[in-house]
Image (cartoon, rainbow, N blue to C red):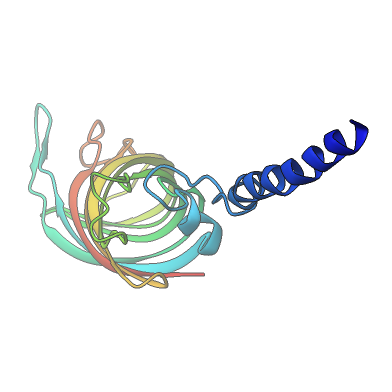
Length: 215
């Protein structure tokens, strides 16, 4: 009797072992879970966290008036340099140095302007990302800083003026290292208190064309 039981167990053991093998193989070969969209949402920020660049600015300065005088804004050209960090794929912190050049029919202003900008990139998976890699990246941002000013044609009371801005634009990514930048910025400078027109706060519509190198 015991021999029959032992013989039966020996016959069943290979069948049970063979049934367990596919389960073990399936466990070993199970793929690791992937992020939504099948790729790393923060990959660009980790690989290319920093950037530097520059831009050409075309500025259209606003007119101004008070009870006695009127000034007409002129169009000017200037340049800027930028350096930034990208903590996340959709968020950048950028420092700008702008060589401000502003003209009106009665006087001119030149400034060394330093700004800190906070920028959101529309790098949204499954909406803007085409063919896995997104090439066109819209952005919006705000900034603030100060400008050290000098003038010709009049005098100013405040040689250092706070500056604020709002911006929007489009980045064209040529690979992961190089980005062309086409943007618009509205710049507001708190009044330096010109002698010619005391309560006038310079503002400008600025159109920017530049480039960034990512590293």
